[in-house]
Amino acid sequence: MAKLAFVPALLGLVRDFGYWLQGPKGDLNFKGRKEKIERYQEKLRDEKAIDALRKQDVRNLLQGLWSLNPFANVDNILRQNGLNKLKEWLKDMVRRGERGLGDRDFDELLRGVNGIGPSILSELLCLRFPDRCWIWNRVTERAAEELRKIRAWQSQPVKGTNGQQYFAWKSLLDEICEALMEIQSQLPDEIREALKEMPYFVADSFCNWLVHERKIWRVAPGRRGEWWNECRENGCIVIGWSKAAEKASNYDFRKLSSKEELRELFRQAYGGRRGVGGWSQVWDFVREIQPGDIIVAKRGINEVIGIGIVTSDCIPPKDSAHPFASNENHELHYTHARKVDWRITESVQVDFNLGGQTVVRENRWNDIKEAYQRQGIDVNGLLQGNGPPPPPDTDPPLVRYFKAKGFQFTEEQVVAFYAALKTKGFVILSGLSGTGKTKQAQLFP
Image 1 (tube, rainbow, N blue to C red):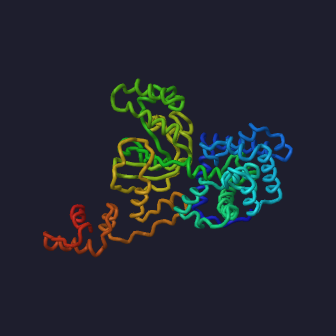
Image 2: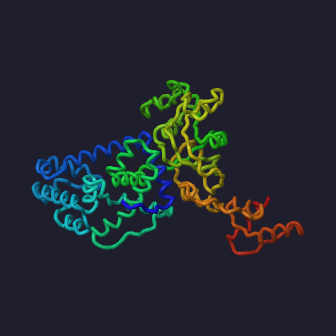
Image 3: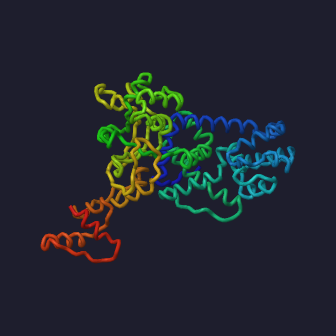
């Protein structure tokens, strides 16, 4: 694989993917994928292995593919082609893959069987030859769309035969593989080994993480953000509910294996009083948030105070890895925590209600990014570690004040309004409706 000049944004995302791989969910996901590839390689090893396949074996191989529509009837594919024809087709696929697949091979394989499209064929090829073939399906295309949004991938889909389109995706998967190799020293030995033996399958894991696994969470560091300074300085995010934690074994919510257990513990701790419904938020913080996810820290209902990347599993109170473990008397020592790499620590006011919950899935992500953009802060760039620092703000303080409130008044407008107030004390503003005349007067300090 030729060395490529991938863009920094892609490298930043791949680093975050590395955090996820080292978390419990990512580790389990990757082990499952590796077992799958080993199973398919054994079944499709050579012509002798394929000849030994029974009808149920072929059915299982097809049913195990992600690309197969869950409502598709595998028996229809078997009935349309017959077992022997499918086995001969699989042997042909392996022969072509071993000698070096080209776009014509891909198209001829598609014409050689009924009921199997490009995504199924590409997955079978990748499962058998993960060092030279890649998966092309809707997940690949959606991952490319996400990468284009943050300027980590610029190419557009090509037109042509299925084979030509399949090979057009190689450059994207190569860049992902190259970026993964760049951070391999940060990864466990098992994944570093997989990068050598099955790089394109690991690249597909990255696409799946980007599309399906990575989540954005809104978390309040204490009531009204009271713990934000400590969280920012110690690279973490924490949650409270200490009264419920006192009833958990050794203060550890992680030891509760089901939502029902956690709900009952909260019922015992709070009865019908405020806090009883917090169990679902605790479950999300302890079980659902994963390394590599994005955290949006909030204060109150209209202020975002930071954005970062989760870099650890949940850390319970009294754990030696807890960010506040060195100070057992600190109230935050008795909170559950996750380590966070804070990429943005400037605050911004948003014009919508962030809600009162401590932990919730973020659903206004684009609006938050736009609010930061109005302050000259590129959220995508800073999250991926490639954004240049915002240019120095040379606007006068009053202009910056209005920008922070979401209004773009020029220096001339602000100066004219200020001068009019100082000289006359009574000012009539004229202009088109919706240009901010009322807000300029209301917000003027």
